[in-house]
Image 1 (tube, rainbow, N blue to C red):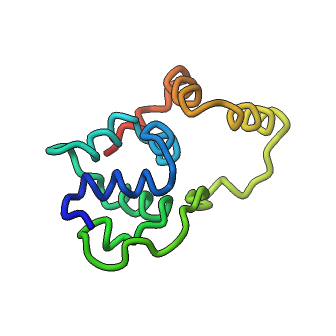
Image 2: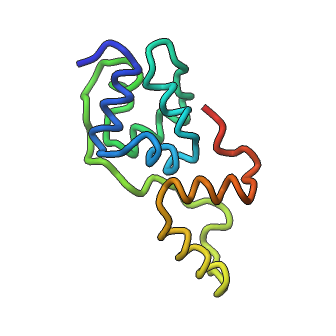
Length: 126
């Protein structure tokens, strides 16, 4: 058991068998944000991001945040997005085709596409 947050973050990511880039894409962040979390003296994830990390990796939130409590409470969950306003509507043909093609891209290609179309900096929160 690690007493250091940056090591617990890395352990959680590795338990879910994710690269920093894959985790970043899934959480809507940059790879450098994940790298900062895993670095000695780096930044700490926000509570919102720690919750998402715990849900995605199956690591107990309390353990992730403090090093106490059960280390893993569930299996890694590849579907952490919550349904919100606008997600329940039916997609038109063009939206459906776009999502199918987006799903076929690698994490790096997805990040590049979002950078290209300008996602308003939404991925830059830490």
